[in-house]
Length: 424
Image (cartoon, rainbow, N blue to C red; front, side, top):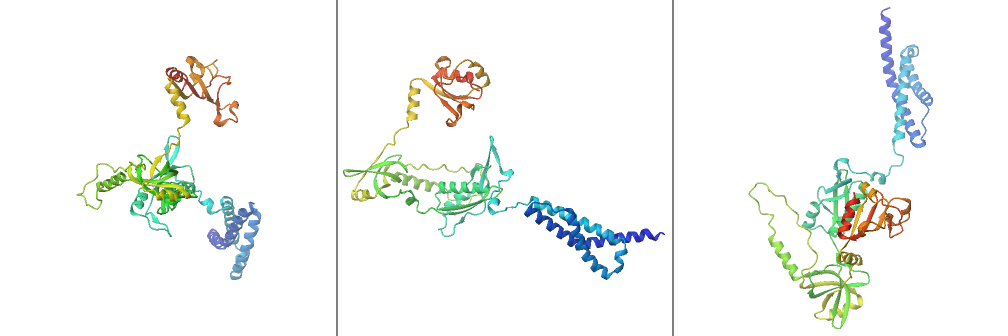
């Protein structure tokens, strides 16, 4: 009588063993079918079908075991083994169904590139997130282009760039490539940024920068002349070639004084190869400011883009003269200068809660002390369809409210007092 529990325990253990051994294949098949059906059709495979499938596969394996041991069908271990097989199959099916529901159905390289930066590298500047992108590793040369110069390579390796942090990595890479092309005039550049804001840069040195600045249908001509002080790339000039006056655009300008200054700056640069006597720098290195591209004036050479027919007359003259043409002045600045000259001022402010109470009963085109409201921007229905929400001129017949933005004009002291009274 006491041997019955021991025999039952042995049968249960054998049933667990046989269930685990037999249930591997049914569980794998059930899990795979559950994943495939849910992933491609979006439908969950019924549990009854999983049970029938698992029992069918297990019966084949159980029949093979029955040939080895015929008494297995009459023993309790068969029931335990069947329960284990069904439990494994149902669990594998649920996990496969869950994986099929969560796995993206359309996974492409474009979607993989829409990764964003890690939250650890984002810096909050006010309410806007920014990230500082720095290069990692060596700046490599682009295949098919000449190698980078040592100065340019070092400049790229030591650089850092502030970019918005709410953009995907692909957009950050495109913006950094455009910035590098603009700042260093690179012929081509390829940038890869990871989640930690580390950039891998492959760049090509500038090539043909002058030819890219020459407009279509024009030619670049270099002349030795007296360079006006402050002339810079893009200035409109007139070249006096004998009795002719030829208009053109400055592509580059260099005077003898500029060359002397560049040579003096190069001679004053300390030799980096000289070893120090140890110790640490007490002051951090400060990068030199961006040099001014305008010339210091004096004798020098200027490259000008002119029409094709004007190239020969310029080259035939021994000493052409260069005259800088005026581009005109801004009418907006002239108007503001006239207003200020007469003792008036224009202020922009946002109306506060107390200021709205003080302006109750007044129209927006009238105010005390000869102060006139020129424009108001509010988010009401009367600004629908107008540019940026601004309403200009008279005809606005409701008082200023809290949150409105306004431009006012009047005497300097009165405008200042009025703005301090109602602005927030």
